[in-house]
Length: 148
Image (cartoon, rainbow, N blue to C red; front, side, top):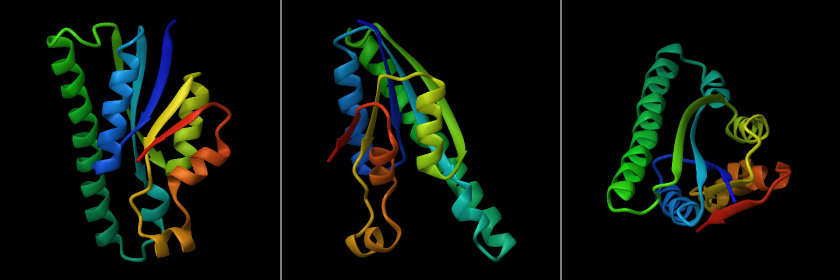
């Protein structure tokens, strides 16, 4: 059965583990993996200093590009090893509020499942602002696999 998986990534360890899980689960079947990194422009636009916004924007874009390229390389390496030969990789770098972009892309691309790492925020920060992972799980209309 052909699957379509949305893999939400950043450069965190939980996202790295989620990527490995997505590759291993997709390798069992023919699958499309949409690797999505979201630049949090919602957060950037809330910053008062334009020079800080510009610097962080560039850093976020560089990190997003690096995260997506890491998964492209991993898929290529896996294919060379004879695994995951039926995987088609699609990469997207989105902009906006991460949970909104993840849910929008999942709906637009008609994915079967979202895979993402658990929040890497500290407990106190999650208490006050919540986590992207939690908001995606609550808002999704399809299964969400959260990898610790």
